[in-house]
Length: 219
Image (cartoon, rainbow, N blue to C red; front, side, top):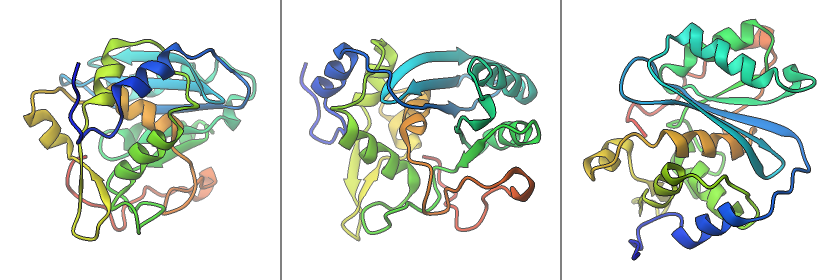
């Protein structure tokens, strides 16, 4: 099938990543996209090295229930408190981040509108997530999953007035007939690098929600 040249990821590259042999050398990292009682899904992704090991989806859960499920997802492994858990902290995820922090988990808040690590190339963290992921796609091993495949290959980008690559907003994505890209968001968080541009692994006792310099537009 043809694909728009505005798409960030090619369908062929994503399909190749879903057919690639697993290589589970490396550490465990987790990405979590958080929803609540609406139509969107809460999705957890887990990888070891560059290979996705597990995906969980939940709907219509309270924030405390979601936090419990996420802690169970982390607790399946030795030394669970050392595992980085990157949580979409743009909205509802803040409560989940706080609960995990209170329980000594290594929860790392990511606000998609916050400043990118490389501000010369990307206007915000979500754009950086997409293009960092695209640069690694030839090394990544994904599970063969139809919804994930669709979400990863249908998101568009544009060039802003500073010649930076910018992913289309979630609002514009939905206007084109798609639902919230919950699987793609959790996957991108799972592979997003943890440090730089305000995305820091702060010790639990010093943790404060990221609020400065955030963009209000939904991504």
